[in-house]
Length: 146
Image (cartoon, rainbow, N blue to C red; front, top):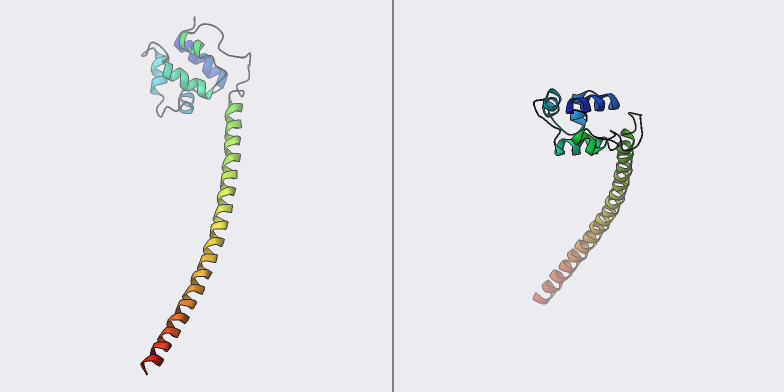
């Protein structure tokens, strides 16, 4: 059974990152919680911490992080770049979706601009018609008064 310090040493070696960088990637603003475990101030890796590590490095076994027993990796992978592939793929997928959303919004904005222009023309035509009707009515009132 590996100690929490030994598990962090292996995680650092596997990822090629320093412990503080791993903590930041896992969403910790300050890496102190990781250092507390590493230095023995905290006796174990918490479930919350293990979960955050798994989200960033999905081929690390959560049970190994929590207990130190069994293999470290879910699959026999020795490449530290492997955990980054799902993240990069997710980012690419998100970027593609964002571009599609922007395109849809651009089309919608274009359609709305055309609608606005048509409504402005219609309002202008109605104003002209109203002015004409008002003028005709005022003329007929003048003739009737005479």
